[in-house]
Image (tube, rainbow, N blue to C red; front, side):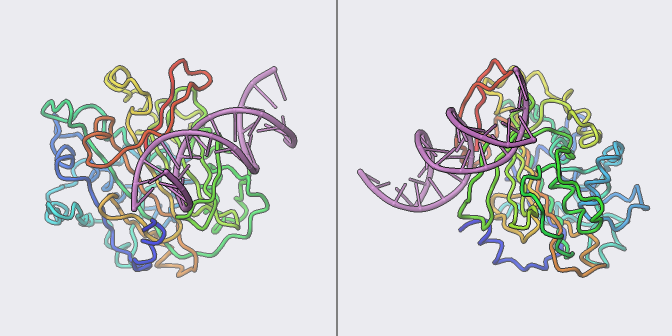
Length: 362
DNA sequence: AGCCTTTGACCAGCG
DNA sequence: TCGCTGGTCAAAGGC
């Protein structure tokens, strides 16, 4: 069953915040840090729920994205003391790998509206870079071959108006991010170049895939050593239906607007020696996947760790078009072997500016 | 000149 | 073994 097909089987109006997390063996690493400060999905998720910027209440995710571009301070707001043992732990079970995150205080008002508000500063890149919160280094207890597997999925869905059809389908995905803003701020329509996720991308392919009714475009980060790729699905109107990030940037964003949050800015420093020297294949330096999807849920619960975040528009506007959904997945190189999933190497190539062959793993 | 997008071909995995 | 599918390659052309 394709993801899209799976999505159709889910209630489109699900608003309950939810995260699904990796198999327990990996999960435990999140909650067991040497310093106890090693954040995990819960921490990341909890960052979504902070009320550090109450004035930013009821932003759409796209607005948050846009806001993130200009707000380098969001990440420090990450709550590190969010108790994983709360309902979250209570919902964990060995069978399902799914637990629901109990909402923190401050989320009440929003959730009464059936929404969760996400603090600004979380861009796709930021989310991706937030894997820095989940250092790719080996887990605690010196488990050399059991590295952290962190997959955090964030879903933001809301109903809003369809944006006017795009004049050009060549809009870059970075502007895709801002594209959803168009539904709120048409005057902000950005069609061209801007890499608003902070990174520069080069399209290397496009294909109509069965699992999607829309063409899927393939991009890779233009940075010489950066293994990050992303897939973008776009509707006929030019509206992004889904973005999937894979990999982890090993550099700072050329456009610091996009990844100026703490995770992003610190990311390069988080390229640990292990990642540098321990991986013969640069693409195995962590793997992160971030998905933005304006449509319905489509992730198999068995494979995705989801945080469903319904933005406020859904409750306040009752519009007719979904808000982008974001799913972040991160996992480290060893988990490529140990995470229980199957990985397929899909290519290797010497890229310009990179003396080492680049490989990709799916 | 360099970078980017486009697009058909090619490849590998899977059933 | 074969067809399907998703992902990547790479030539060509545009900016």
